[in-house]
Length: 216
Image (tube, rainbow, N blue to C red; front, side):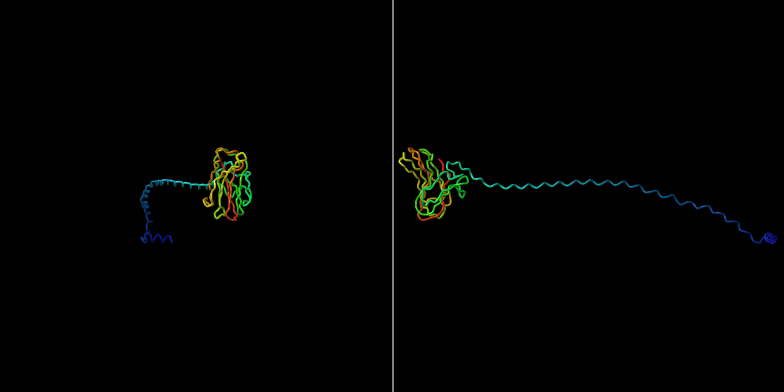
């Protein structure tokens, strides 16, 4: 074997190829690209302005209280009682303080009528002296059977029972309203025995007349 190989070699048979030369390594890739410039940070937005606070609603105005009637400072005002006023007889049937009507304050004297005739409702030993002007307020209903009303003052025995009155026909008075009537005490009058209102009917009638705020 060894001899054969040598023969082959000496005969110049097969020439063995030289080992391949190791190629130089390839050039590295190009330098990496330069990174992009870092962007500037964005500017923050402007802070919004807060909304305007709403105005509170206006409070409601409280209701107005009822009207208070004027106080009655008259000498006869009937606010707490009939103050001694009494009827003389038919056709009057009674007299008492009442809240149904009032010229001032909250009460008046209610004089009940029931029948036909003439009578008085009065106070005894009143105080107005000579020359005083006594003011009466009377109220009559519509459709009444009244003939007349007459506020009066009556002197006592020393004045010879002199009667002084102011007569008014019912037709001359305003119905469903207060009527003002005055009587003047005579300048030479003796002490008074009575002060009151005479009521006369023209027919048998049942109803109420009111008297209030008698002053001087």
